Amino acid sequence: MTHDVAGPSVASAGQGDQQDHGAAPAAKARTDADRDRTDKAATRPGEGTGDICERLRRWTRAVDAEPASDLMEEAADEIDRLRLAIRRLADQDATLSVCEGGVTVTMDATLTDEEREALQEAANAYADDDCNQECAMIAATLRGLLDRTK
Image (cartoon, rainbow, N blue to C red):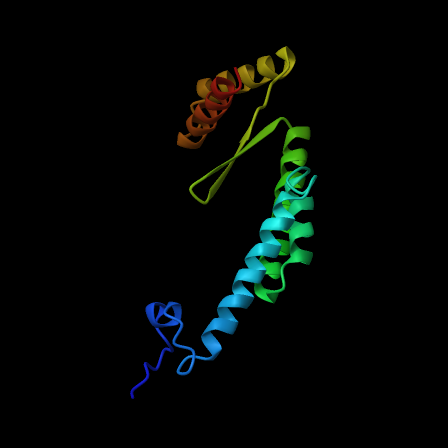
C-alpha cells in the first residue's frame, strides 16, 4: 500500500478508514472542538459588543493557536495606533483617509483675513519684483497657497 507524502486525503479521512489513518479522526475531532468553543465564545452575551480592540484582545485569550492570537493582538495594537493618529490629526483640523493600502493626510487650513492679506501683498511684491525667475516662482507658490485655503 502506498501513502501520499502529504498525508491522507480529505476523502479517505471522511470514509472512516481508521486502520490506515488513525491520526486523522483525532485531529479532526480536535478541530471540531476548537470550532465549537470558538462558536460558543462568539455567541455569549456581550461577546459581540464593545470596541473592536477589546473584542480582538478577548478573542486572543480564547485562541489556543499562538500565531493566531499574536495576529489578533497585533491587529488590536494597529487599530489603537490608527485611532491615536486620527485623534491627533483631528486636533490639527486634518483628515486621514486610507484607500487600497495608501494613507493620505489632508490638512484643512484656514487663514485669518490678516494672514490672507499679508500673503496676497507678499505675492504681489514678488510678482512686481523683476529680480529673477525665483521671485516669480515664489509669487506663484503664495498664490497657490491662497487658492487652496479659500
